[in-house]
Length: 260
Image (cartoon, rainbow, N blue to C red; front, side):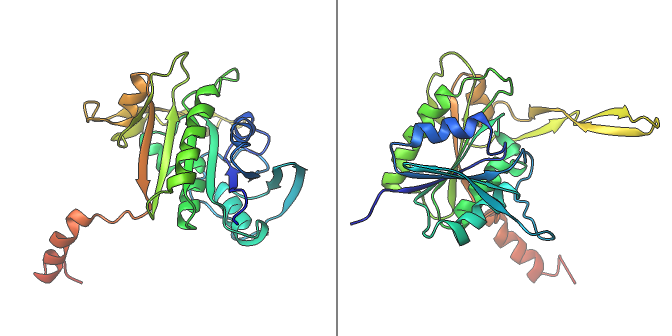
């Protein structure tokens, strides 16, 4: 008889971040939990992996149903190392988060939170990224935990299609209106850098900026859903092939429109 589900929990805010421990606490009744997370913040790491220095990890805690590890690598490193060398069996579910800050629209390509979910999906693990669209210290993760738990129950029961992972973003408002399944907004960042100077009066640049929804009236997009008080749930795919353009591209190559 199969035992309890094995749930791998990771993030990009670090093993001591409040979000990851609140997520683990809300999932504890669903199975055996293993937190395997970076030793500090790794935001914006996307799919980065460590290749030129060795990775290390350490056991921080082990109690009934929960084991906590800290790793010197990126979020993707954490998933790879946990699955390949630590856990002993493939997890039934991977949850990444709760990220302190939104990962809607184009952020899916930059986010370490989603980088971990993508890696879990690559490894054949049903994977979910969970983010709160707020950075303030007194943010509440209650709605994230409630919706994350509901998704975890559903995915443990029914799984996800091969090559698909889920991106859940939750607004930090008093009453979330519900969860809306939607598409990724066509967004990009504007005013991305703030110029300053160092002690030698040389220019330095700080990453900043704001996310701009280029097509705000795109039906059922995640930025619009969040702006309207809903949590957004976007099904994302690993395969980034543009199948709609493939046949046209074949013809272009065939007719020497593109030549070598």
